[in-house]
Amino acid sequence: MNSGAVTYFALARNLGVTIFRRQIFATQTWRLFISRSLLIGVRAGPTLFVMAFAIGFVIALVLQAQLAQLGMDDRVPRLIWIILNEQLAPVLTAVVFIGRSVSGSAAELASMKVSEEIKALETMGIDVSGYLLFPMFAAFAIMLPVMEVFTVAVGLFGGYTILAQSLAMSPEQFILRSIENATTGEIWHGIGKASLFSVIVAMIAFHKGLNATGGSDEVGRVATEAVVAALLAVTVVNAVVTYLTVY
Amino acid sequence: MREQKVPIIEVTRLVKTFPDGTTVLNEVSFEVSAGDVFAILGGSGCGKSTLLNILLGVDEPSSGTVRILGQEIHGLPTAERKQLLEEIGVLFQSGALIQGLTVAENVALPFQRYPEVMRDAQLVEDTARLKLRTVGLEPHAFKYPRELSGGMKKRAALARALALDPKLLISDEPTSGLDPVGTREIDELTVKLSRKSGTTVILVTHDLASFDRVATRGILLGAERDGPKRGTVILEGNRDDFYASDDPLVREYFSRNS
Image 1 (cartoon, helix red, strand yellow):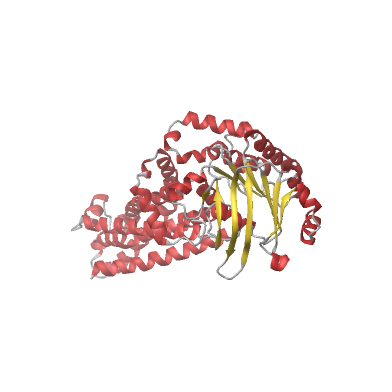
Image 2 (cartoon, one colour; image 1 turned 30 degrees about the vertical axis):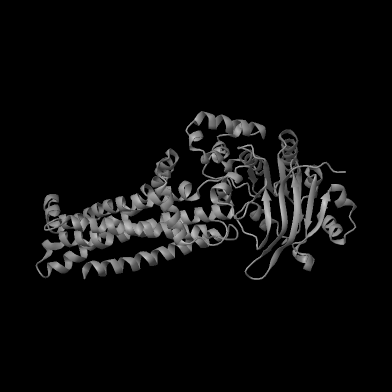
């Protein structure tokens, strides 16, 4: 990985080989996966949940104000459910992961690249993909969808706090109206998008980090580039996926 | 007459030209025998880093051959190249210790390639401690690299490079950034290693005090400012040959770095 640029294709192939060779079952890999999951996923929780609560709160306020004029404000829980599951929760979770974990992972890999740590691993015959990238990749791929589910729940709670006041809605009523005519497909839609975003943002972090050149001053620039590229990719892919699923 | 020794490294007519047309290594040839501490000297832009990357197989030469322990490293199948790399320990200029691991875990890293050994945690720890004792760092086994001084980091990196008892140690500017005490410690460890275990050492340095203390033989490569001589071998020989040389480029290099 040191000589020449690391391509997305090479990254995908190396991760595929790691999984195929069952290196993922090594104890060390799981130890690293758990620590990465805490760093990449769990520690994003407080920021993510505050934002999810505030967004659920705001959506409920706006929808309730508008739909009350049409006498349809009892439809607000259902709309919050759909908006969160299909759009906001996967995108919001991805955005928070990009801000915290993509920038952090890209900077960490860039720092390891410029300080020759990656080269050291390679010359020791250690598979960088299996030892370093796979635990990070698995943490993104598992934690982003998991946190998306929690984001939906917290966002719904944010919406409920408004409706409990304005419509005197009980928690049971709110839940029943949210899931009225709902299908499990709606939940899987959000989880599926979050899974897709997790793969995209992880690959961007790896690509930018491992292609860092020069000195330690490059690390900040690489992190910024990774964040911008990941935000663009998630936004565009979300638009394409939404279009394809609606039509 | 010099005693005939087994060549550990044979570099023949090595050329490296980058895509922009810059030739950083030009017809470089040399041999390193078993037990030698072989210095690679040269100013800025002489191609030392490129030469090291080629020796380690992470960069490809434009032409020429590199044989390590009798095997041509470029063109070797991946599995055989990995096996060959097991015989080579590398001490990087920056130390390149993994920041998220303790010193002992860093020293144990080379065992990662042997999953059956890794399962015996006690054996791995004992071996790591033994290597750390060799470099005088056993009491610091459970510290993180950020808690060590520059000299200690280099010694820890040296312990890691020696973890698998390599036949060849490649040491890239091992004393750069160290104070005179740290420099002397690393030099003494290198000499001890070479004399006691017969490890062959490739020492890339611009520190002439280290060269005097440690090297048995070496080459001087032409630097960027040397114009057409850039990337060529200006002199190959032992320490006496270097000090006796009347080549103006050799004299200039020694006066500039003294």
